[in-house]
Amino acid sequence: MAAVAAAGIAVAGVASAGESGSRTGPAKNKALQASLDAIVQDGSLPGALMSVRDRNGRVTNYTAGVGDVRTGADVPVDGYTRIASITKMYTAVVVLQLVGEGKIALTDTVEKYLPGVVRGTGEGAPLDGRKMTVRQLLQHTSGLDSYTFVSKGILPIRNRFFDARELLDSALTQKPTFGPGEKPVWSYSNAGYILLGLVAQKVTGRPFAEVVTDRILHRAGLTETYFPAPGERGIRAPHPRGYMFTPDENGRPIPGSDLVDITRFDPSIAGTAGQMIATPSDVNRFLVALQGGRLLKPRELAAMRTTVDAPGFPEGWRYGLGTIEFKLSCGITAYGHGGDADGFQSRAAITPDGRAVTLVGTSDEAHQAEILALFDKALCASN
Image 1: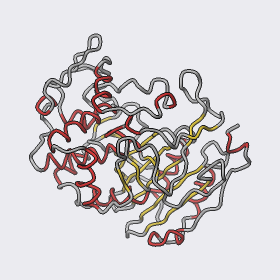
Image 2: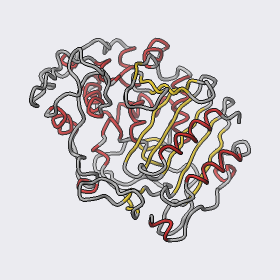
Image 3: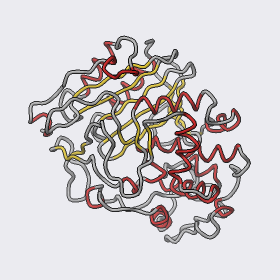
Image 4: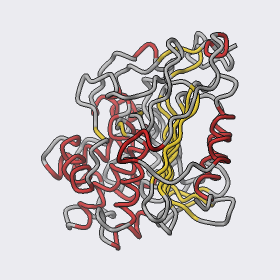
């Protein structure tokens, strides 16, 4: 039995939207709150938090469970969490801004910006930056595999700092997931987004954290989003703690085992593919700014939302340039991304009429299907 259940802590009281000051919104949707409560009921997912922004810009924040299984503290309303691969949307926007400014072309090869850097060294690896384009990296169609440092899980490396080039070099030792003309021609690659971060740094001449802060966070007024500095292993307050199941000797989680607190670790293992931290409401503000044209020109936003089949993703999901197209159960199409970091799973998207939802659970391993179902339900809700 998970430690949270053994401690007799299942569902904590839910803070009202009015407790968050300027984040006050309309009355909570009772069905959404009940669904959030149900997800944390057995204790394997200690806590959850969700921010819903309606089409008129009104915000409602939800919480359930506990933010700390040791103390039983409430989940903080709209607290900071690791957003993991939702970071890819921000990285993609930076690259597409540079495309709109004529500094990068989607058809350009990686070789143009990083000459000699991308050369596969694995057995039979045809990886070559002279044949790999920016669009392919954004869309996960380059064939570049991911790096190998997480093969035994996060615990052995939780305090280890990784340089972006070190991560990339690890990926280049792997045989590509597919070669030219092979199918399927789509495979999710964190290393591809590490490489995109290096391209953006080379073109701008500045560290990526500074670039994303200036070009996105400041421009859109995202005061509750940040790219952790080198060596920054914690999360700004207020935040819930993140948990994982106890792993076996190979680093694989043992479902239903005791929970391990994995809140604090060095996020450089994710880099420009998944390092960022934000509150759920600030992720929604990003989605609104993006869809509203404050971050990308119409041509680049249209390119971002031009999608391909994504084998391995749930039915109805397709992948664009750093964004996922979600076909919802109510027939609506939404755009956003998901992210799984050790200790947190997050899902975020916006509908065409401006309804935005970001949902986070404080374990990346428990109740994944239920999180997705509630995410769909919240995006389809009328209020």
